[in-house]
Image (tube, rainbow, N blue to C red):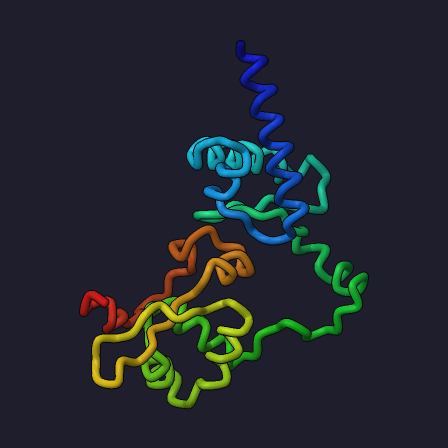
Length: 189
């Protein structure tokens, strides 16, 4: 009986690996459960067990199984980024965030959901271009509107942000000492 359970787990893990490899982006546990005729809980457990084996340094892989809060993805290990960039003909600096854009992303990540005006207040300058760039890159997205005059847009980070920065959840963001609380969260927005 135990061998049959282990064989089933291996088969599910192989199917998950094939799906993730073919997709090339993160796939939700709900979608994997739907595809494999299983429950989301069973898929989460299978992915977690598979990640422990798959990501073991002694396995000698160039890929890693990235486990996030609601999805997972196969990706190359960071130490091979320069080699991959060269192989794909990607110029140095392409895809990197400017210091300004990174500052705006940081403010939004730590104070979300937040408005452009709040980000500008913290930074002391306009952030129109940076916000547009982050939306285009899929790192932030509108999360609703603030119940205030003019109903300004509220922004927050996306699953793409978590994936690109190697985070499972926002709880993994480094703690910042003396961080001001987000006034929008205090108001229950």
